[in-house]
Image 1 (cartoon, chains in turn brown, yellow):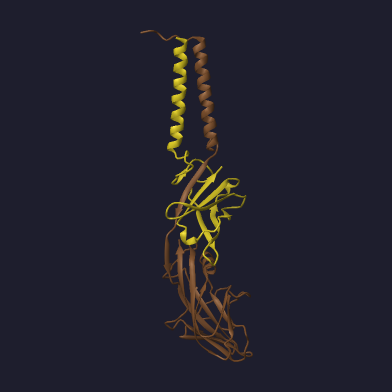
Image 2: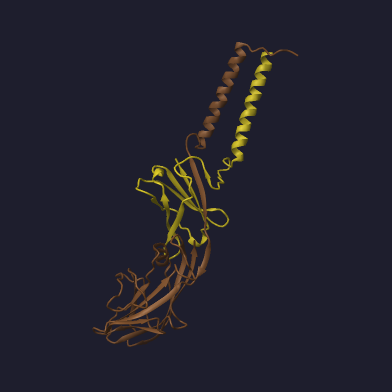
Length: 213
Length: 128
């Protein structure tokens, strides 16, 4: 067997070869962005589902400003001089049966409202987003919650109506406090009424909610 | 003998380079796809942060918010990819984490038109 002699030329060859390979490796790693960067990567898997949030409603009357009319079979929106009536409808996606956390979100939400009767008019009823908390069993005209100035939807006349309310429900889920809508007669015909099927009815307002969490 | 040495050197270099490429390819970089579970390699946090998204009335994603990003992550690039049930990308966006006090809330937009109902997972990364 011949002995391998490490000559100066051979040593130089090995050094040049290793240097070249090292340089090529670093260049390739750099193209992947891994020379100095630190990477933290993770996945978050979502659970999909559907439910109908717990619902409540109440009629508040200017003529009886301290009277609470919660969860009746019917609730009436009335336009009358100094004796208006509004209707509050609320949903709680954080309560049973939905029980959604604030990190959840609405994929789609469709509200169904049934108007069982109208008198005079029919007037237009505007649904304003309620911006402060209220409780169906204690709310009255005198302690009504605040509400926005731009309606989310409107309707007029008897019938069953559906409205997409995905953005409102999504925001309400994330805030942990969805306050629903205030229904107000915005036409103003004196003594015009619009009667809504309420919580005590089989046609109570409802939301078909598809969610992620 | 000198020729034999040269041949040996070239063969060694070729072999080593081929091994390097094969190794990189086995990580999935060759095809442009990255498969990552939850892996921390240094960086500003090792926690899995929580993302939520907002939608419009049509049910399309308008923005994604990543909650409680540690302030030590300021200056890092946060990337979010929206993933469907087939593990395909529906859209992605990235932004630089700004400075903040306590846990940062980082908002990303520009995912295109993505139906929230198609979204089944978020793939997130923080890069220094």
